Image 1 (tube, rainbow, N blue to C red):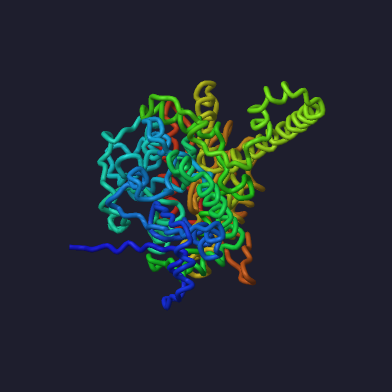
Image 2: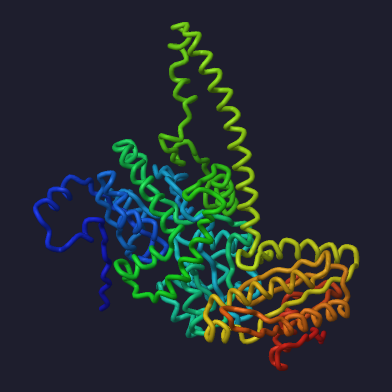
Length: 542
């Protein structure tokens, strides 16, 4: 029998163990608050740790306990049974709301969800459709709802693959007993890179399923019973997150010293911190930002997949802090009193205020539009290389292949993979690996032709779609890229690195599908690697 210890941390628990009478009295004056986390302690919850350590909760008279996830219980259920006051949940909470559960979203810490589906590179899965009949680890219930929504875009349901119930371990994946598993992009890839396991990541946002992640949740009952506490807890939490994002090293030190229940290495937590901050998008929107339009889009996906059939009252689901409620809404409550009193001067003031408010609203609307456009660009861009990502490429690739088939035009596809990239990470560190990926992106950008669509599609893998390009023209392009990278010197910390890439090429002929075109290029890439690497191979039609 295996026993699992789940630790509970609170602000007061970090005080000296020899408590004095004064400390006891101070603790008794604080309001106890319980927060259920989605998982075990890690950088995923760094903002809560910073708020605890720096006394932001205590300043509001709150004694906050952070409770690690128990795999045998559902966090939302604990909230509804009055065992906790707040829960860190995902976008699936919207389904609970549609079922009449009075949950309220206070803040979305992650603007993009870290949840993804990861598959082994050696099982022949290149597209979502290839997952049919495979053995995949996906949680039941609403926990992995966006993964099932992503699979739904390829018309796949849980009946189309062997669903393995989550065991919170990746050993079965490493050993090859399953073909794919649900992961957080902030977590499992680090261990797999260390183990030298080749994998491919399928992220829902690349298929139009772009959800919030790590949403702070409470209930209407809790808000009604103590609105000031809810607002103060939210403020302290977001302040803690701003500190964690601004100074991640301080947060990492805190986790290593007080919250490292999983015994992760500093390198592991640094990897998690970097990937987490990418998802928070602090340079794009304020931390915790939520858009009603974005929630509407999530609702539409759930309805399309048959997960919801009722509309949501967003006025009650999305929390609006008291200090963000406009003066205009307050004045509306007293319109009759103002009119009856005939206070002309006040009316002039209100009119001026409304005019000024209208200007502010127009400016805020424009700011939101710009932020939304920037966030949309982020969703289609690989943040490391600034190249288009898989989602963007597949949209353009699908369009270009269909046009080529419709009008009988040539089209070629080039897949490229950095040779022995694991050696770069092992010998020089992941930071050197990141710098190498950036340099490859520059080579692609400077050598690709007008009209080509190039992208980083995962790890050290890149792709170039070449419309109106024959096989011979594409081969010349691939060879030019191969030579350009071979002659490129990558400098990192006064060390010179040399990189090479292998290229696989396929060209459209007949009526093969875009997936077949992809698979042919992948076969050619495999031949290039088997043939000695740093070379170009063209798919030979059988």
